[in-house]
Amino acid sequence: MQLVILAAGMGSRFGGLKQMEKMDEAGNFLLDYSVYDAKRAGFDSVIFIIKKEFFEAFRDSIGKRVEKLIKVEYAFQQLDDLPKGFKVPEGREKPWGTAHAIYAARDLIKEDFIIINGDDFYGRETYEVAYKYLASLPKGSEGKYANVAFKVSNTMTENGAVKRGVAFQKDGYLTKLVESSIERKGDKIIASPLDGSEPFEVKENDLVSMNLFAFNKDLIKKLEEKFPLWLKENINVPKSEFLIPTVVDELVHEGKATLKLLETSSVWFGVTYKEDKPGVVKALKDLVDKGVYKKGLY
Image 1 (cartoon, rainbow, N blue to C red):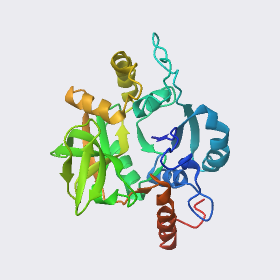
Image 2 (image 1 turned 180 degrees about the horizontal axis):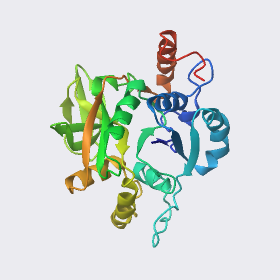
Image 3 (image 1 turned 60 degrees about the vertical axis):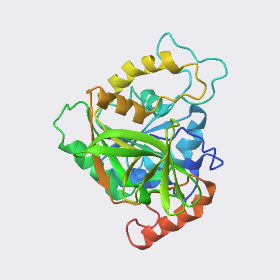
């Protein structure tokens, strides 16, 4: 099974390429921990989706280190990587979104796979849950997707709002995923949907998506079908994005896929804001001190 890491984004709020920020005394990045945990869970290759202009710096600082542990491949998310008949509109600078990032790796994805964000720490258990689910499926399964969801209280930062997909479910399967900006306001946690609809309260133990999805390889075919349709409607909308949660939600409602909601008790942490870094460094050190990770990792 393959691990696909979405690492093409520049962290505008963080103030730099946050995937390449050293997070422990040994000089490891959050990405190192993600690959390490995925390898321990059973994944045997990783695809980094990055911007082409960062390839050499990324390979030299991360790729060469993790390739000692696991097979490494690279895909480049580029604005002009569009289906035949489409071209980048004048003035477009914003990337096409997370579903387009996976589309960029279409020639490398050969097996069932999971996707993760490059700037999030998910915890060892999360990868084990995802691997166990995919391994339990009959060979050649299609449309049997899953999301490893976190309790919202385990995904917050003290330094501002975070973007999360609020998960609604029935009998363990996702019925709706509402992409929202989530923030503590007084003694409440308020989700403000990114589509502009009415804000609503979420409880501490309500589940949210951290963009860790488990997919069968047939998703690539579905993306190749949906991307041109999306472009026809959105190509001239400057900030529009072809997002994987939206695609999955559509497939579920069209009856073309199911999305199993898998719960993890892991605590997320990451560098959404520059002010988050000291807390992440401390959290990793605590895990090393407890023996969850060995010092130096590799």
